[in-house]
Length: 210
Image (cartoon, rainbow, N blue to C red; front, side, top):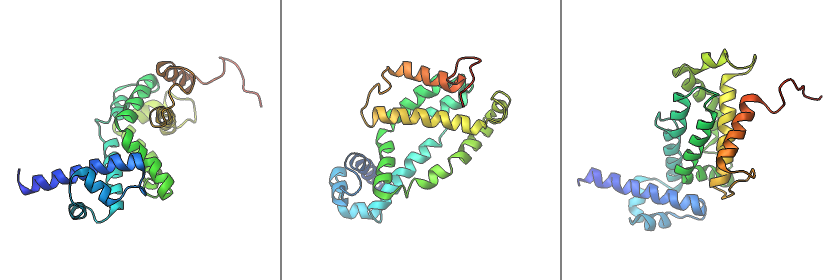
């Protein structure tokens, strides 16, 4: 293993250790010394790769955001290969797989909200509709959906709403450890949420009271 490979390996170890500690202890309760000890490297090695602790935190969030932009990201694959909203159940299962596989990264979002007032994630969420727009146009979804949804409904809003509902549900289940918090198992909940999103809540022909 040459010097460059050793350097990259130690950087990876530092990030993996920081992810574990930040996601379980929080940012403030984790020191650079803690990260170095967990990674099996010196503090000097940590500072060789990262100027300070916050730089490590930002690097971890960047890793997650980059993963979310990848075509291989579970939710992206499900969205690109199915027909929305017929594939809502598949999207729900993909959201669960995503939160489960990236649990520690998702936890960093809550750490950022609590300890940084959302400073690091604000731009990511403010750009979300633009990224969905780009993704949907790339896969020819927006024009197709516009002709299938109710008049006046935005395809981007429809997809984003489904995405946020599923991610929120499974964040509570997996990160907070609250299983079946709708009083039903996962498959039943995914099916019911999909049915509501696809068809609404009222019986056919029923008019909402005002």
